[in-house]
Length: 140
Image 1 (spheres, rainbow, N blue to C red):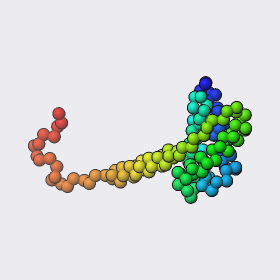
Image 2 (spheres, rainbow, N blue to C red):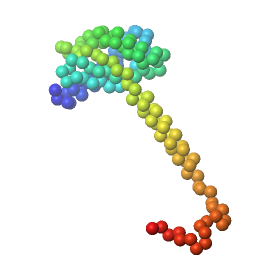
Image 3 (cartoon, rainbow, N blue to C red):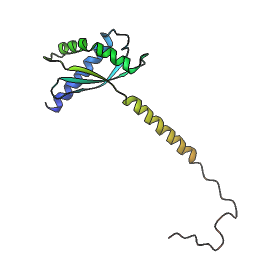
Image 4 (cartoon, rainbow, N blue to C red):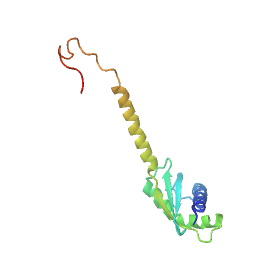
């Protein structure tokens, strides 16, 4: 399947699923979910749906369980709205890239703050603490 077509289908699936989950799924475990990406297999048999819970009271594995429970409904509606003969089977995967990005950003911020704290001018040498008189200070 041409890559442009696959990308178009993935983006349409992402858009439709986001709307369906927000408006139609009534499972309290799901709550507010952001669909971050969709990856469709080459044979269009399965679609991996990457999600991130947004301000959810439930841990990601419970949200995934709720989404998996609604997968049959979502698959049927997806097929109808996109006029697909065979809608792909939906696999929901927690997308931890947002948490990883926040962790890396925090590490970078701490490193920059440490560099700024360490960038203070070094203390001036005390008089008489320089190299001994007559010492060779040239470098080879």
